[in-house]
Length: 592
Image 1: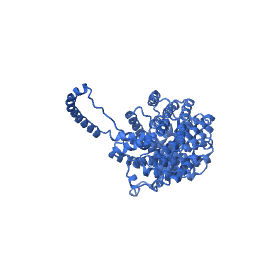
Image 2 (image 1 turned 135 degrees about the vertical axis):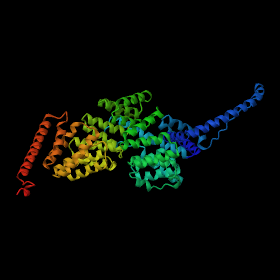
Image 3 (image 1 turned 30 degrees about the vertical axis):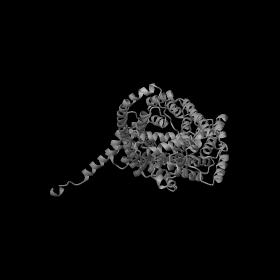
């Protein structure tokens, strides 16, 4: 992406009031051209300019006399205005759009057929419809109601308008009208047609980042992306590579994402955009420590930006870093109190403090500012679970699923609620969805296995826990513990002992609570006792009795088991002595 192309693209986006895409592309350009090499070039150019200015100063001295006599020459700036730049109606409409007066904007451009005017008329009507829909939901006070019954009333009229416009013009829509048409098709649940329109728009103008984001939401698998009709020029464009990173993050292809990000960083200094993708990929892959460091770096680069800070607050919440989360919330409240990201950050802070009602208040405030914020719905569902309000939690999670069907947290939340309500068949459906989205996450396989276990489906449960074990979660011993219990239940004692030993090793490795050792140690002591491995049995039993906080009941059981082991050991020694005394002496053949 060269500088001239990028600036022309930014101008096109600004002229059509596509400010989100314009901001994203401007951030890219700022990062690309602000590296050290560029700075050095600028410094060298500045030195050359300084030298030229000194030469010009001498020439200007000679002209001072003429200026004093009123012979100054006026400088004129020639601005070439063409097409709709000369249309005062379009200029007024664009200003109205910037001031969020969408109805006046669309009304002013009604009947206009030039490309920019027609686009802005359709786009302002679409946004107006979305705004009115959100207002109806807020007025009815039905945040947890069904989103499906609230529709954008402008969708069908816009669909007919754009279709007729295309027929009258007898030519393809321009890339920006294709984008609006795709938004309308998405609202009318015509996903395949929307994908085609977005593809056409991108092939004509690849710098509209909002267009790429819409496409990412519509594509369900990476295979669908490979089937799109993108030209060779698009496939080699840096915008496509950035989109590919973003798309693969949503489909859990994290290794590929890190590889692509490294390649992009080697070619372009993409700065905050690429860093944000790396941080999000680390967060979703479960590497919270790396994600936290990357988000810290992002916050240090641009401390007044809220991009990704809500995700950063989720990481601080998971890592239980109350001081850091408090500091982040305080800073964001100072300069952006009424932004959705700030409300989520503050909500997470109150949740970490255990003030769940206050947390819900802030998540609801987020939804008043941005009703389609899926993260706020999901986090609010978590808070309702803490308050045992399962009905509200289900409604919140369902809205989260509706807005972000690829976010596993909403599916997992629904499964967890139904598990708490002791409805394992319902929970099974939702946990199945989570493992489809994140097949590498051992926690989700454990949840699914627990569900099968509740239904008495032992073999299915074993398969789930074995999948969890294969994922090698470095922070968990639960798969081993569940497998040990299940194999013990079906009578495969040797296999159970193997998994109990693995459970014990993992607990020791992680430095977990000593009380967690009681069950595996007791089983292994008894297992070795029954197999007459007395030395190992005594060692396990002694380790069990050495646990300082062991309960009285467990201690009595352990002492009883230890006495049984000692009795077997004594009996074994006695039997050995008898056999030795009854056996003939090794030298008896020489005594006669």
